[in-house]
Image (cartoon, rainbow, N blue to C red; front, side, top):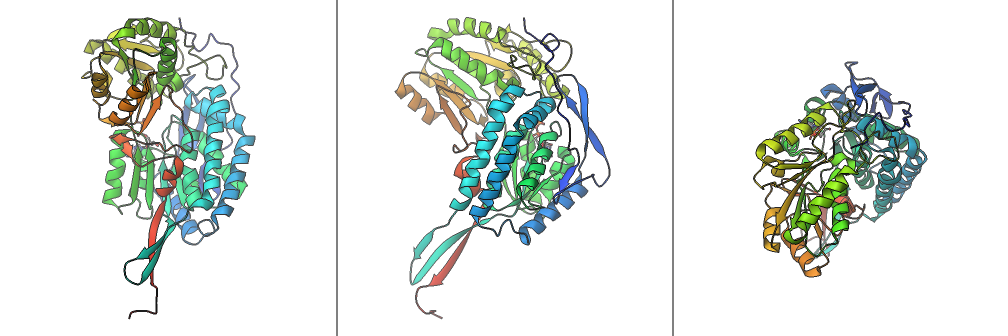
Length: 499
Ligand code: ADP
């Protein structure tokens, strides 16, 4: 039986909501229309706050501020070292407010408070500090050219960037997108997800306190088809960095193509395979598979949603995986003993439950879970299907919830073929003690990240992004700075001008 909301101890202390307006040109302002929208606590279904709703007119004002800050402001013109110093100060201020920031994401997205404080926000700090240190290490090349010429390249900030981010990791996404863009010297408009508008405003406030000039970071909350679409179509935005669903990614690219051909990078959906070979330690593999799909309630683009287990250990794995899912504690995200909070909102909750129904009608066997958990809030039992076939929709489509599909394989060739039998290519996991197996699978699986005998091992220095329909462009690492830079070639004759 799963422990659910209501039967855990009351540890909930709601954070004070200090910021609900839009952040434009260094000021908190109402939306042009004065309209607001409600953001809901998924643990209770109750409204937390009313937040200013930005639409095209608000995006216009934010882009104008970012344009002015880019074209005439200090940020792109100061040294990388100076930008890095200010970014470090921004990181220090975030560190002083970890508790409150983690609580905001917890109440807004149903994320575990304890994970926020010890994993997510520390990871955000690591990202910001990595790019603070990188800001003065961006440089071009010198070139000896044919004929009597020499050349060099200047790496210049690309300009005004639009960051469109999803709701599953509000803090991480905010910093993963803004930090390399700040290091590059860009200015930006961030459009958080409508489900989780709160923490981005707090970050904007702290950025201002740290000395990031007005107009460099603007935050416009609002909905995708209005605020998000306006940013993608804007003629004065030079680049869009988007994380979200594959369907929306297509719209983002289309809007960019139809407007000013701004550059686009897309980090989209996934259906990542976790491949477990006979030689694996079964207990370790079960623990890894559990984390890979149930952590953050399965609301992770790289979730290991397809688990392929080799036939020799399959039966033992199935038995242990079921026990392990049953002991996974679901409940109040503010309770430190809880391992899985509620799905982010009613829409996602219903979507996940409908996929579970679909799995049953497609003929998969429901091994464990499958139901709503408790009668309040958007909790779902950790769910495992067996007898899943590649062609089933539950094996092909991103469910974005705590639903594992378990499948059996015989040979390494079969595992590789099945792992690749999806339109996605975000990540993959391999569990084996055999180096040759690990190497072979690594080179054969088309995915942007491969984790061998681990999962979710993220680091700011390690590039992250997708193959195939999981998108293109990379977040994190020095690769991410490149998408916020452009290359200018400068050529001079070596001798007095030939003309
Ligand atoms: P989900 O369906 O899980 O909410 P989305 O990809 O729709 O995922 O959302 C990710 C982000 O994209 C959110 O900030 C959302 O508001 C935004 N978004 C949604 N539709 C559009 C659109 N047409 N143009 C730009 N951004 C959009």
